[in-house]
Length: 360
View 1 (cartoon, one colour):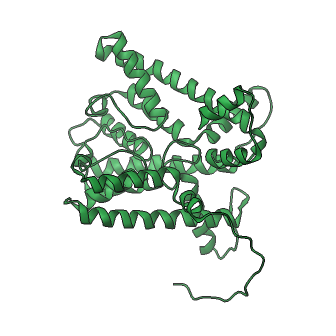
View 2: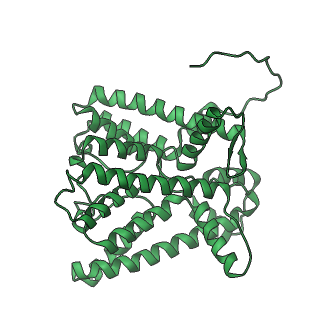
View 3: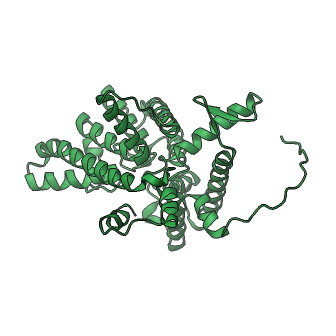
């Protein structure tokens, strides 16, 4: 979509109002007037990150492969795969063979995080840095604050819990540094990318459920990842906080979240849970496998992650179809699909009287 939009700009076609509305929704960007500059920024940021990542990975792959061409190819492939949160690897064991390499782990995780934050947040951060260098002051948008807050908490909490859960299990034979590095890498990649340095099939039940929760939340709006998205999760948490405090408005960072946005966030979560419940139930009927493996497989598909406890290769044809549909729902968004199926928005020409209902 980004490249199509770019060629439309280059050929002088431009965007109509309808095109701008569609692109605004796809890129999760509010200002329709700046979509052209946003698309150019996205292409520039993508090229720079992937180029820098390729160089860093090449320098670290070369001593292992002893082959310049093979190291360059592997570096470019994995840099693009990591930044795009694709999770595809040229190695049969993903990155297990490099679980002790600090440089490779940090480079890959850095690319995954940058790609998973969403282009809007990355561009916002780069513009802030640029404005500070010019002596100007540009602030973080509310979306950037929420995405960075949730992403940071999930990485820190995920790393800590994975370390505690696996220090005497899968990671018991690793050094302290490799245990921490392995927990950190899996906490990062579980939400978006799907690479692994630990044996996923051997993870404990607590670790597997932790990864399931991370995969359910997923990446951020405007990124290439799936899941309900970090901003949706943030709005859900702040909505609960407001209700507990007896507030009618959802507020955070001295800003009020519009009610329609709150409704949309709640709809996304409810529709996502509904789809996961139905698809997991269907898979349980079709596949002869432990429930944890089925649930893990389904959530991995919903988050477009790609991690598996070994069930993927044994799925039936019907099971694969369900997984494919789940990936589509997770990547496109359950609310987006529901709105597309539901048709045009109905006009509200009247309003019924309110009546309270007992909850709980």
